[in-house]
Length: 458
Ligand SMILES: Cc1cc2nc3c(=O)[nH]c(=O)nc-3n(C[C@H](O)[C@H](O)[C@H](O)COP(=O)(O)OP(=O)(O)OC[C@H]3O[C@@H](n4cnc5c(N)ncnc54)[C@H](O)[C@@H]3O)c2cc1C
Image (cartoon, rainbow, N blue to C red; front, side, top):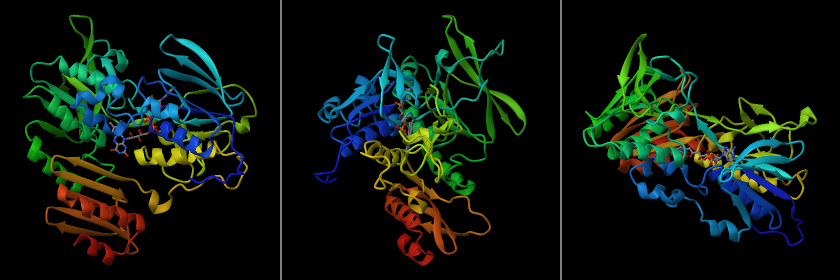
């Protein structure tokens, strides 16, 4: 970015809450906009901002997780220092007072609480795994237990989750049965690494409430095709348990008084049964997370929230509170559908960071270049063994849409057209179809015509 020599720079304090990918990018963009602002990033995890998408693959590449995920971090400490960005790790944001413009932060190293003042704040606190109330219970009393207290229940969200999962796996010597609750992308991504990490002869059940896995990305037919491809590698080791919603995860105390999960009660077509488990991985989706808000002032200026998510405009600025910005999984842009994706986290963080550091927030020049319309469509790519799955846009066509199935030499594609424009596509097949998959993703973003799309797939 080229700065006009006479352009005034913002000199106040910008505090970024959350040291994930969005937090890191927001701080960098703020620094690009203002060389004079004081920029502080506060994160509760012990690691510098890291690429969360690589966590599941790191399960069987343990070295990547060591030294606070040194193998996954986006930039090292020196890099931030050179840009005069202060990063406070192991520091939990407890309360944000948007009226008094101050934040209460607890340093987890010494449990000391401090107050940090700001002129502008950027929320980048991401999302947490979702666990329905009452899901985890003691088997005999039916009393609810926190997942944190159960030694063999894991999530797939943070470095700590992965280290805990590794720790439970390394104690295993005999074959085990693991249950993954949720048949979405997280479970699919982690399943090969999990299979690789467990003792030989171990098996995995993947529970899915609906009648097909990857239900957010694929229709029934393509999901079946995907599973058929996977079964070439995992038949006899991985069982896809469809139409089966987890009702309860049952726990009991072992001889060392440790609470352990022993099985998962599932309901299939109205009938309950228990699937025994030595290890349970909960991957039922995430919920955006924001710290508590405090302080008092003009109610109209309080940041607007929608179901626990910060609502921002396409400047990534709170729709009601001008000094509050948001990026990544913890916020929703009022004009766009919510998607907890890595690229969206970075796109929003670039905009939020730059705008938070803008000299005058009343200036019309404040940046507003969020991709919108077809450009903002969420695409997903999954590679498992020699199989690739790509899905983008409208993959659940209605009667008004035209569906074209295209057989490919080592797979198949489904194209969904609305008024002859491509609005969604799925491709499943051999890895070597990646080029065609990428072309389809671009074709959906450009809403190309059916003739052009067929040409691309040849
Ligand atoms: C295993 C895995 C695989 C994924 N794969 C893909 C993929 O293939 N493609 C894709 O598009 N997306 C993927 N995602 C999603 C993607 O990683 C997220 O969309 C992205 O990380 C969001 O970035 P974020 O910075 O908004 O939030 P996060 O990455 O959640 O970071 C938020 C940070 O804020 C911290 N924080 C929260 N509360 C506080 C507090 N009170 N005080 C201080 N700090 C706090 C959190 O600890 C965290 O470090 C995957 C996610 C996971 C977990």
